[in-house]
Length: 118
Image (cartoon, rainbow, N blue to C red; front, side, top):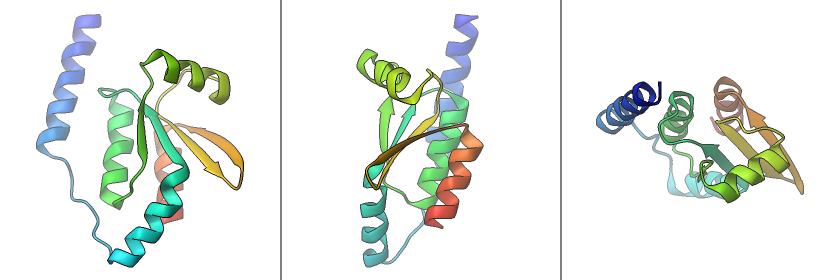
């Protein structure tokens, strides 16, 4: 099973590399404002996870600058478990107004980003 997952993961990464999707272009001032708003966001993910790739592609299409955190690293994995409540990716960490929210499910994350930054 590991070998199949590894091969499929590499195929997903290759396809994402070949067809990255078009990045949204905004006026400089508007992009700077959105970049400032996204400073409190971090996407916990695995590189070859298909749902994580889906979210990363949506982030790119919207032209957002969101920190990408590798959840396979022990420190990041532990933070995701302790603060987020479960080891599940993709997970968007939202630091806003002194509060932290952890959002799971790729469709929910994409819908949130589209609502906030479209």
